[in-house]
Image 1 (cartoon, rainbow, N blue to C red):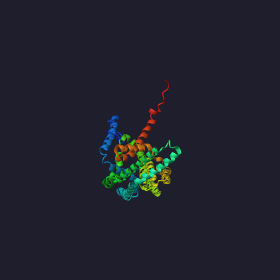
Image 2: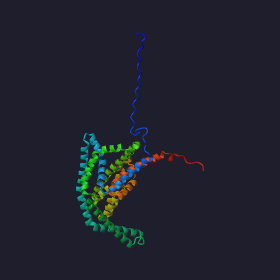
Image 3: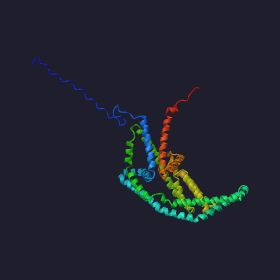
Image 4: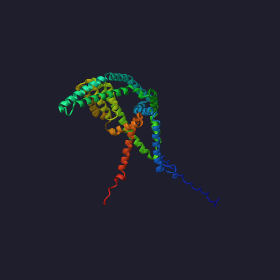
Length: 392
């Protein structure tokens, strides 16, 4: 029809609004969500620390096999990852590694313990002769000193007193070592050593990566990046020190036991193994082994030539440790000072016994990393960088 209007076009619909991008997990769920206060953050830190310390104190009597199993899982995690990369299932790799370590420990115990007990029998049998031998050697040294300095400096009474005290020291050391090694099995519960620790170690090693990932997912989002970096630094320091130190202890134990036995020291195997194992405590193991070996050499040989051979074994061991073993196995990766390690080991032993010794080095490494982090924060803050005051 003429004069009819064309149909009106419908109004254009508005374009759909773009979908908002997903918010990061660290953001609040909505703009009005409440942020955690400083008091709540500090409450979380203090509360978590208090719960951990209380649990450690409450369950300290039964925690030793579980902490030892955790140490085994931590130590064996790198070879387990290597086997996994080669196509071995993680569970099978964990089983093979834990069983291999358990078999090695049992074999070492079956081979070494009878030898150590036999040497303790020799020590108990020869103890009177050892006392007489060291008394004779000390008397000869004092007689020469008396000839050199005169009777007014070293008289007969002083000489007899020193000889008797030296004999009593040897008797005490011999009895203490015999009791320690003779009752060594009583220090460890056989069921715990042979059953609980390997079983718990297997499950921890099998699920180690999953447990670490779960713990990481529980970190507060606000500080997750910093906590991850601190944990990586702690792992780097701890793994370098722990694995390197254990290898050093093993090599030194084999060297000292072989060297002292080769020069003819009757208790060389026992003293050498003790010196190597105690090298886990910086300077303490080598010093304790050196003093014990020198006293036993004086008691057994009765001449200064035998004492010199024993001293040469330890001096050579210290040179090899300081210039070959320690730099190659640990080097500059270790950021744990020897004094700090000694303090941590003794403090942990006093507080929680053997459990404290197991936890001492990981705690020392973590505290050291956190301390260095806060020191860096302090050196970058106005507390340190504010200029000094001028004028009166």
